[in-house]
Length: 473
Image (cartoon, rainbow, N blue to C red; front, side, top):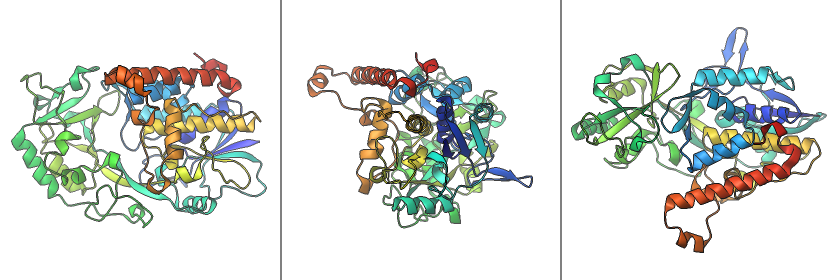
């Protein structure tokens, strides 16, 4: 009996590597392929490699006792393959875990290639419950650009329409074209190493940038990007009526909310004192390394939906980028996801599968972010493997970050469901008397993290064969 994993982004390879590590035969499907010497890609991808990062290269904070740190700690304790690879491919990024995206993808592909229990199939899947199949389970991890044919099949199987929002890609600049005399290295509040380049703007420079941004001409909406009537929320309509996820709004949409909105968002200067002047700038644009060679940097939080020529003109108004050469411009692309609260159980499993079990993982199941996608891939891989081996499924505890993330996507209000990143708001709150006793927010977070890690360790120990012995700490 085999497990079929559909999707070669982040959650799919993680699910495949996890299930194989637990002794299961895996067929890993990826529709991106080289056909007749030419690559067949999605509109957002540039390669056929596994684990290609199309947006940022950051897996978020590594600062102890933060929500992203807690999630990654649990994943490491669970033997997460892709997070281990990310640690090996890390580039300096202050208190965040960022990776060399090319090396990261190469190592994921290598790990899959050397795993004898994984069979890679480069073709599009259009059926989830094929008759006469010897498959024991299917994990659907096709990500934000699930093909039209498979989208229709998912709609047929679930009886539910997709929801959709727009995801983001930030611009990348050639490091050699940054005027280093106008910028400085610093980490916010001096936490971690000073790996970010900071482009400071005074009030006049900010106003000039802001006015140019408001007047910029939007990019034309491609046919594959257009949203249908099923999108239930509107976080900020652009010039063409596109609806966006609140967590990754285009900078021009943010700017239309008020002149100072960017200064409290992606251009926030707080904690970024200029060491040359001793003063905090009016606004700051941060640049983060894209690779170990530091040959390119991305503009943090600068996703947008503007014409490329407009981006070049406006971004060169930022001090230090006057002569910048952009290796990639910012983009927004459509992201699809299922209504998980109405469809999935606590094991990320479709509740009404007619024959074989179907699990969903990654952004398609309603989580947002690289780390969260990998995390659900790891869980789906564990659950599918345990089920295939005829063992009893035990859900990861609600008290953990992993359990809280799954609890949110499976128990949220189905009518208003919106994907989520891992935050402390998702964790179980402390008892009221303890909250009154512990006034300091950071101390409360420490308590929540310790409780979560203890609960995860207890679950891992109780799962027995569910987590391989070589991964236990």
